[in-house]
Amino acid sequence: MPVATYPHACAAAIRIFVEKSTMIFLANQAIAHPDPSNNLDWSNPSIKLRLKIKSALTELDQQKSKKELKDAWDVANGVTGIVHDLTFLNNYIHNHDALPAPSELIITWDRYHPYLEAIFSKLLEDTTV
Image (cartoon, rainbow, N blue to C red; front, side, top):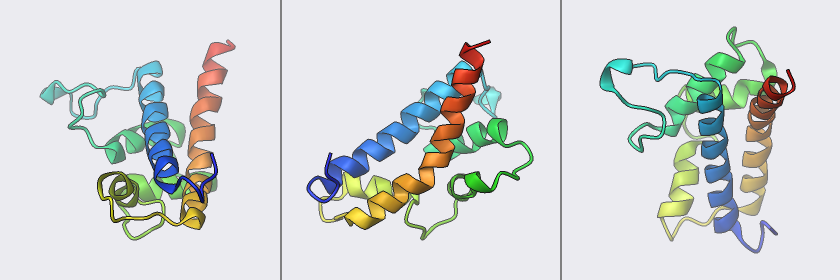
């Protein structure tokens, strides 16, 4: 899909792909919600994507030392004002006046790519055993 022609669709696709991939990973790895006392499972819409990403990263990078996951850790830790901030992705979907720049969407994808690659590498590793 040409990002310059369909910036909103590309922003939505990135946002959805990050969330669905994270959800699949959390379910596949049987990662429990960090606060089991509230009886929320990961599919509950009240659970923020930031927490889902942080929980996945905690499994993928327990020492928080993988440089290629720094951008994902920034999202998980709530760093704001960065081009791949979840607030921007949500705004592109929910605010019709917010027009994502194609260059920003490409940067956003590039910053999430190592995180997604780590997720799918782990999932593939587990299925080939």
